[in-house]
Image (cartoon, one colour):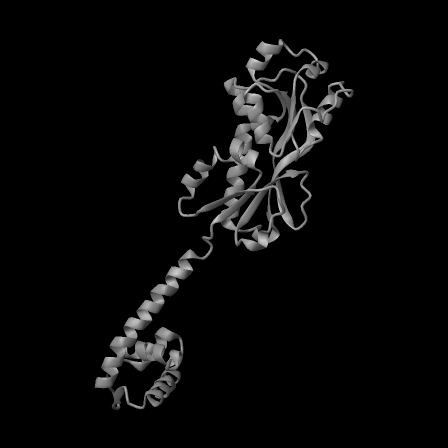
Length: 296
């Protein structure tokens, strides 16, 4: 591939289009002398004159006219390609790492509202409890359970994890009312392997430390525990923010008045390098506003 000196080509195009070294120099923010040197460099490289020069006039030769027509098209195409790339800068998709149950029961039902407000930006949704690799994505945020102490990240508390046993109304019809925590011995406890201490926390607070919190059925995902509860197969340890819609609709009920603050919460986190990213901040503001609405 034989390429001419590209800066000289750019200068030649400006001179040929304007018909003036002085005007081209003003457009390119250089001196007329610098323009003349670039033209001479290009003519030397091509081995043919591109302009005829007189004391007061500058005109393209036949070779110059032909070369200008081709060069102008190439520079226009290059300019357009450059603008396309520049226009997409900062518009990488937002990757959201999120626990499956929080995504299914809290975030995904609300996400269309955010997408409607940001139609030009894509969202890539990943359900995972594993470590988050923020370096693998230009723009990424995560929702995690914890206490807000992730190093190297900006953290925002979203919703607290308030523990409350839940079951279907059909189960209570079958068993009769559960009046005290001790009555749980007559049914199956449903729980998540990811949060094995939540039943113990609630049972201790409810004054039933003798009930084995590990008996019953343990699922990898709390979503399955909730589904089993909806099917009337037992009592699940509910994270109240995630079962609020089912409670409101009457698909699930709280057989006990006792609710226990686990000390954990769902947090939005993202790396410090994105602390001023406009798209991340818009997502953060929208998400925090949604948590306020859901709290009422």
